[in-house]
Amino acid sequence: MVGIYARVSTEEQAKKGFSLKNQIAACRKKVRTTEVMEYIDEGISGEFLDRPALSTLRGDVKKGLLTKVVCLDPDRLSRKLMNQLIITDEFDRRGVELIFVNGEYAKTPEGGLD
Image 1 (cartoon, rainbow, N blue to C red):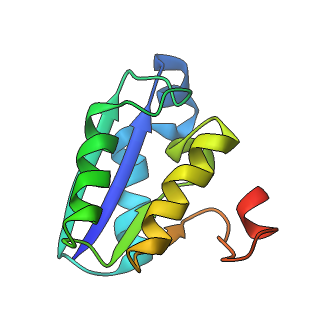
Image 2: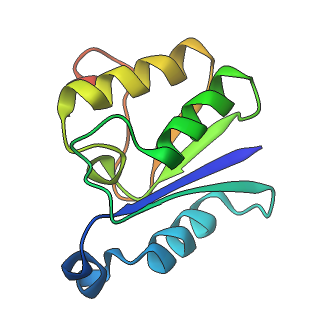
């Protein structure tokens, strides 16, 4: 199963093409499967690790329900590098592939800092 994570924190982002609908459509196009679970945080800052949909996603990864997680780009996952590293490490330890629509994620120490 593939998890799609989308987040928007402000109305301004929605106007600039970051709408939840656009993010989900781009993620679905990237993975080309209908077997997805959507995790959506609306109106929540990416600075915080404790977000309802992200917490559910992380829990489902721990339960082994997902094999891949797709997100539009790294700043939709988190605005803080430290939190990105925590999340990506959790996914890596469970063998879950992290895919970004805009950009690539390299499973190297240097890639984790991009």
